[in-house]
Image (cartoon, rainbow, N blue to C red; front, side):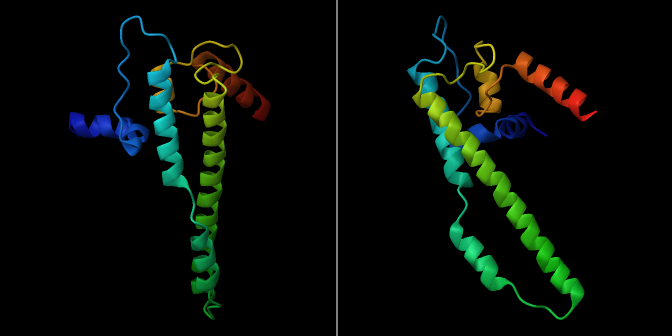
Length: 149
C-alpha cells in the first residue's frame, strides 16, 4: 500500500468531509474559530452522508415477498435484518453527531466531559464525536471490562 492510500484510509472521516488534517499554528489557542469550523464541517458532512432515506424503508416493505421456498424467505429476512441493523447504527451515530454539534454550539466541544482536559485535535479528527480524553476513555473501558467479567 502506498503512502497516499494509507493516509486516505487512516483519515477517512476527513476525506468524507473533503478536508485535510488540521495544521495547528504556533501558539494557536485550542478550539479557536478555525478549529471549530474545521470540526463543524466534518460533522455536518458526515451527518449528511449518513442521513437514512425514509423512502428506502418504504421500498423495503413493498419489496418483501412471501416466497414459497423457505431458503429464499430466510435470505430475504436476513437481508432486511442486516439493513435494519445498519440503519439503527446510523441513527445512533447521527444522534452522537447532533450531540457533538450541540457541544460546539454551547462552546464546550473538544474538552473531556469527565476531567475538562483538552481531548486533542488528532483524537477528534480520528473520532469527532469523542467526549472523553484518552486517559478517561481508557479508564472507562477498564471499568466496562471489569463489570462484564
